[in-house]
Amino acid sequence: MLTTEQIIEKLKNQFGEESLKKAYVSYDMFTIHIPREQNIEILKFLREDPELNYTFMKDLCGIHYPDNKGEEMGVIYLLHNLRDNVEIRVESFFPSEDSNIRTATSIWRAANWMERETYDFFGINFEGHPDLRRILNMDEMDYFPMLKQYPLEDGTRTDKDDTMFGRS
Image 1 (cartoon, rainbow, N blue to C red):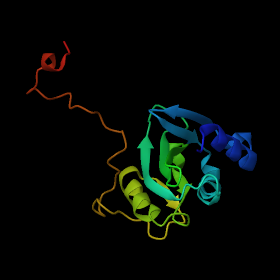
Image 2: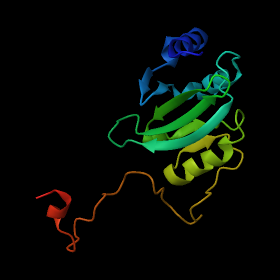
Image 3: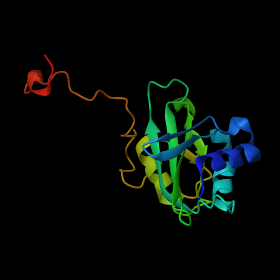
């Protein structure tokens, strides 16, 4: 059975200490943070190493943390080693002013549509993607709807009573 310690050791041996910014378990999911400059090399290693064997990419999505200065934007890869039934979450964060990361379509063909969806909703540019364009929203949209740039509530509404929501 593949352990988190084995994964950390293999990655550090292959890419060095700086390749793992963080490694932890959250909600029973092993998570690693990697530099975006090494995303393809690390993802390819996770897939092709016979012991790690993360051949299945279950999901790829974007995330926006506007309060994390210098690391507001991120891409999350959810990978699965089907042989040992072990999952790993791989996260890479970068500044919103430079939201570019290399495409993983050369590693997993399924990344194609997932990266298009992430681009469509978060505006993350996947460098080298074969067909990066909107997939669900209208082409005319000039914004990315999942970015947390707008208030969650309309402060001008008069049809609601804040006491109903536990606020005074």
